[in-house]
Every structure is written in structure tokens, then in C-alpha cells.
Image (cartoon, rainbow, N blue to C red; front, side, top):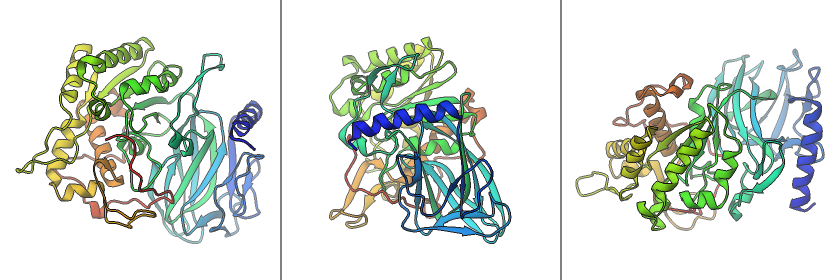
Length: 441
């Protein structure tokens, strides 16, 4: 089936299926099935004709401990495994039962392009825990209020391989002993949506070892109340974000009470776009449009690169872009998260050598098809992305912004002068790896 035909089929399936019911209930494990649930066993490979299944079944195991049909059995694997469901774009609550009636478990859950939702969930012997996550699913079709197609986001060729433009919800189960008993998906029409715009330092990066603060951010917000919708893409400037209709897609979805986070600068600078040639103008237009739609704009200054002077102080490589954003925030009376300032503190606390542990610095052959050393002073690995996401949350908390009440208990007080110990950072790697540098710098 050609890609265009598959996309049509997916949309047709969604319209039929969701016209009849509002969600899915999956019972993972052996042959015994809870009433009203769809059975999922170790051989349930994804099938477009039924609309759900595992991406790869080669290492899956079905374990049945008897007892309760829903929680007495589970699916597990000795490597990360991925479950996908054809589903229309929107926000969804996903309720998970994790654990083992006769053993322990340890599970990390990410969605779509390695978007962190649950980290290192451990269960004791015989314990089953129920966890809820809230996920934004998107496609590249721009629709009007009637749901009619009025345009398309112009995706880059590499984006067509991403797990977040493919009309599927994909859930990654990872860690030392992931054990999944059940999964329930229900639409969430009430959550505040935080739309993220930006470049490769914000994007949901699909491949190890690359990562950004945007894909870590969901971990720090209370599910059901708030959902993160990351529309950032590598290499983008404010102008390119408009030209590719990414912002048009957001304008058609933004609701009163939602948020629009705006972080641009790295590529605007590289592209030679001076402040006078459009950066200020576009920022102000986006702010005004967001307010007109009843939503809340929040500016985010671009973080520093790993460039130090002889005194181990960060060198500003972003010209006057951070200052321009600070001035616009004052002029337009909007909130600003000064990630530029926070990252300076963070990186200087690490020092030039230790800071490499936060960036994509790896010896040759650390990843598949990587004959050369990786030494990137702009892009982050998961540890660096995690620290920057904490900086973003810290700014929300320190300024007592309205979003503060939605910060979850996963966030503890963070001091960028005292970075987390990289050796204690928990991140089981996904199966998707690529040494190719993202667009932009």
C-alpha cells in the first residue's frame, strides 16, 4: 500500500472507529481477557487493518500468574518494546497498570519521539501500580473549525520517519524489567495544552544520543491537567516556522487558556537574520495573535552553546538575540523564561570539561554507523536536556507563573549552580540511534 493510500486508510479507520467509541481498552498478557478489553499477547504485531499492535514482537514474552484477568498477566521484554495505535490527533489520557503479581518490575515510559512520561517506576514483589499520563498526538493536516482540510505542514524529508507525524500513538516501554498489564486510552478535552515552538534544542529528538528540553518537559507536569504539544523542529527560524506552516497548524488548535512557548535564536542568527530584518516583528506578531486567541504567550531565550573563555566563563555566541527577546517581553508585557541566563549559570557550574557530559560528546563507534568522534557544542544528550528542562521549570516556579500549580512532584528544587550528578542520571536508551547531526547549529 502506498503512503498516500495508507494515510487515507488511517484517517478513514479513525473516523469509523471513533465514531463508535471514545477510546481503547487493552489487556496485555496471556489468553485470559478482562471483560470489555481487547486482548494483546506477545505475538500481537501491529496490523494496519486492525489499527494496533507492537512494532517488533521478536523479544516479547507473555506471562500469566493466574488470578485477576487484568492484572494477573503482563507483557515484558529484555529490550525496549513499542506499542502503536491508530488514533486521531488530539489529547489523550493513558492509564497504565504496571507490575508483576509474583515478582518486581522497573519501567520507564516514553511516547512518540522519546517524550519522557514516566521514569524508573519500580514495583515491589507482587505489587501492581496504576499510572496516568497525558499525551498530545498530532498529524500534519491543517484543519478549520469544521474539521475540513485547509492546508498541510511542509515536513522535511527526515521528519517523515518520525514517530510523531505518522497518525499513530506510539508508546515506548523501556528499562530493566518493564511489565505492562493493561492500557486504557481516553480522549482528554479539558487539559491545558502547552505548545512548544523552536529549533533542535526544543524538538522531540527521535534518535539517541540527541535530546532536547522539550521532550523532557512533560515529566514535570501533572497529567490530566496539562499536556505538552511539541511542534519544534531542527534547523528552524521564526521565518521558516511560518513558511512551513507549522505556526498555522498551531493557530487552528490554540484554545483560550492554552500556552505558546516561543524559543528561537540559534538558527535566526546563523541565517543572518538581524533583529531589524524580521525577528522582532515576527515575535510581536506571534505574541499579539496568541493573545487574540485567548491563549498565553511565554518567551524563552535561547540557551548558550558550550563555548568558554580562558577564565572558564561562557562566551555569548548568540549576538543580541537574547537581549532582543528580553526587551520584547517587557514591551509586550509577557512572561519570559530566561534560559539563556540559567544555562550560563548551569554550564559554568559544570566547567568546560564536565559540560561535555551534557552535550553530544562521544568517542568514535559509541553508536551504530559512527566512525568519527561526536563533538557538538550546541546539541544536548538526554542528561543535558534533563538539566535544561529543570531550568525551564525552575523559572516557572521562581517567578510564580500561573503554570506553577501544575508542576508535578517529579520536580524538586533545582539549583543550576549545583547540577545533578551525571552518574546518577537514569535514561535507558531507546532502540533508535543515529549519529547524523540534527539540522541547525
